Each structure stands twice: as C-alpha cells, then as structure tokens.
Image 1 (spheres, rainbow, N blue to C red):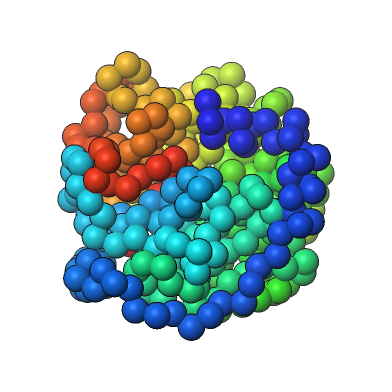
Image 2: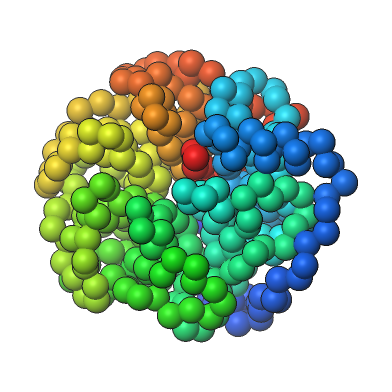
Length: 344
C-alpha cells in the first residue's frame, strides 16, 4: 500500500527523510505569469468563485498538483483547473484546504521540511504561490492535514517522521518563517503521527492519529495549547481502526474517519472504545487505499482512492458494502496518487 507505507512506515525511513530535509530549501515566490490555458482558467475561476468545487491534492512524486472539478463531476472528465508546475513549489503534496475567500492551501512534503503553499482565488496553471509557510520557526515536519476555523486560523496535522507529531496553529495570513500561535505536542497529547484534522463549530479540534499501538481520533479543547491532554479519545478494538488518516465532520457533529479501504462514522461526542454507527467498507465500495475525505452540504461523502487514482462519491447516510453513486476517475482527470480532498 503506497500511502500506508509513507505514513505508517515513516519510522523505518526516517534517516533518509532527515537527510533530505536538511538539503531542501524553499525559494521565495515569484510574480506569476498568465497560464496559456486561459479558457480553462476562466472556467475554473468563474465556476469555483460562485459555486462549490472539489479540490484534490495529488502526491505524484514527479509532478505534484492540485486538480479542481465541479461538484457534480463524474467519470473520465478533465479538471476545470489545475495548479501544477515548477513555479507552484508543490512538493509531494498530501493535504489541501480552501478558505472562505477561496484561497487554496496545499501541504506536504516527504522530500524535506514541511511546507504550506497558498494560492490566490481562481489560481490555475504553473503559478507561484501568493505566500507560503515554511522555515525553522514554523515547526512544520510533514503537514499531512490542513483545515481552517471560522476566524481563518490555520490548523495543521503535523505528522512526524518519528512518533511525536502534533498540531500547529497559525494566524490568518501567516507568511514565511512564521511561528505558530499555538502548538499541541508532547506526551500528554497521546499523538504519534497526526494525519488528519478537523475543527467543529464550537472550536474543538479533532485529530486522526496513526500509531502502531492504539491508533485513535483525539479531540482537544478549542483553546488547547502545549502538552495538552485530549478531552475525548476514540480508540480500541471496537473502533475497527488500523491506520486512521482523513477526518471530516458533518453538520450534526458526526465524525467520519478514513482508514485504508473504508470510511467509519461515529456519533457526535463519541468517546472511548466505541463501534462506528456506520461504515462504508466491502468489495463493492471500490476503496483500496483511501486517505482524504470530505463532505458537501448534502452530506455526500467524497473519498480519494488508489489504485486506480480517483475520487469516489457516496450517498448521504451510505452504510455497508455499497457502491459509489459516482466517481471521478480515468486518464482525462489528471489524478495521480490523490491524497487530500476539500470542498468549497
């Protein structure tokens, strides 16, 4: 399993990752030039600035990208926008988020210190980021998950090449070698490799945690800082967790967790060794490796998959061995090793 090796097997390859981290540096953004595909760019801009779109982080080692689709995209369909190329400074991108103003946030990397690149609304093609968060003071390691709260604070699931990851919170508009305004890390947090992150409407912070012993979803108070203990923790044999990765919340506070090959749903406020109330899992679901998940306003569930590279969409309330109601997959989609997914 490709992504499972990268995240669960991070300890075995830590030495080579550390050497690569020391050798990688991020160049300052340069002024962007118009992309030749102006028709596609115009369509992406006009569609996604006025209607929800699907944004996918493609980890492709040769050419990382963020591909963008209309919400109703299905089948072997080309993206209406794509951020890719050497000027984008995307590197093994695994996470994507979009804020209320439609700025696009992309996070990685596995070839060096973590970075977050931020692109202007409607960005398309080989464009430089409008700003980035990167450098020694940021504390970024892998940036496997990104989300934003209603104030615009930027939350990062900062996975570690060694067991000892955490959560970094940056101020709105953070740029360059910015220091987090809060950090959740330390023994009491019970975090090993923070893989996914979500924030609910009360400000509580949900983190999916990959660990060889006691994989979990940890929940922290909205003002948690430092070596803070979780206020709730979903873990144990009844949860069916192996490697919990992506995480999302619906309007009722239910907790959706992807775990290579399936998605598990827990009731709002779940705590302890509890079974999911629903699970999308089985031979018909067409999920092999799945990492990123997102929900639209109708609670339809979007899940990245590999192989083949694609995004599956499941009906609201889907449960059991169910087929997706539609899927974005095929050579025209330009999906390659999709990991993170966001809807805005």
